[in-house]
Image 1 (tube, rainbow over the protein chains, first blue to last red):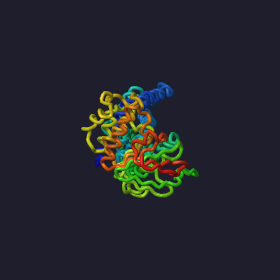
Image 2: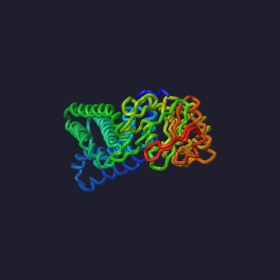
Image 3: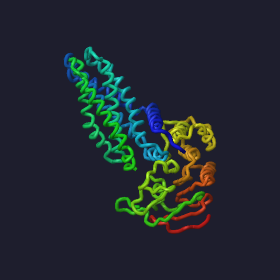
Image 4: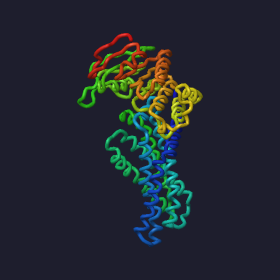
Length: 226
Length: 206
């Protein structure tokens, strides 16, 4: 056996994860309906104050994306059993490639999650026209990527721990806050026509930092978990 | 080898040479699986040392060594949502050995008619057969079998023999552990007995 290159390994891991999720549907079939329900509950609590709903709509979307996105990424990292993880190690799979592949699969799932919830948000909150919507597409992609990286990293850190279910959200929440803050500021800045460059750069920087940390720590974390 | 305050393997001195098949018998809890996991480089010995295919476990980089080791444990390492064919193809692609032989090997282990079946819809015996198919596919230099015969019917015994012979004939080493020594005796060159974490007896040539 000669093994295969880093990116091909990452691609195979992502493909396998997406096939498993496509058939089991554990992450998406649970989070999408609950995400939609969460978005529906807020207008019921606020009432018919349309201007207020329009103002909080994007923020609600981002908050729901964060909460349920965390679940998607966490669920993704929990899909492999110990024998499966050990098989991947014995096949010589690069731990960093696993991190990248797993994050990529989670990103795709989160993008689907967000794309389903966008029309729900528009329908329920009617946030009005926001100029510069291509930037919003970028925000959605950056948010999905960032949450996936944070979720996968937290899932890897807590792998094999008995307190995993408790510890993972505690790790993910503070790491995700700057991203949520930046995404919220971008939406608000687009609304009042302020510059968004700083916030976009912040999101890009967070994604880059999480990628570097995830790739650099994948191997030692994997060895510790066995 | 210690887990916390509990000693699991206390006196083990074992060497497996090229082309050798070694059996390790012993009751439940004697440390057989722990020994196998150390040889698989998945568990680091806390005391003493283990050298696997030239690499010291816990000290040397193991990625390349691991590519030449196969462990067939108690639980099959299959993804339940994938078919038997997809599981083996995934391993083939990840190992960089191509998927050309996958179908032939599944036929070889008697799963030609079931390769499109999801793993979680397959019996334990069928899942075990896929594990052996994986060993035939990846052609390891060191094959580690934990209770090799568990979950296999009499007709499937030949698969165990074929897999062991394949590794041995290529000059690889094989270690089988079992609490039923009689079932592995026909396959092994030497049998050791592990009791209370120590290799206490050698039964000599089988």
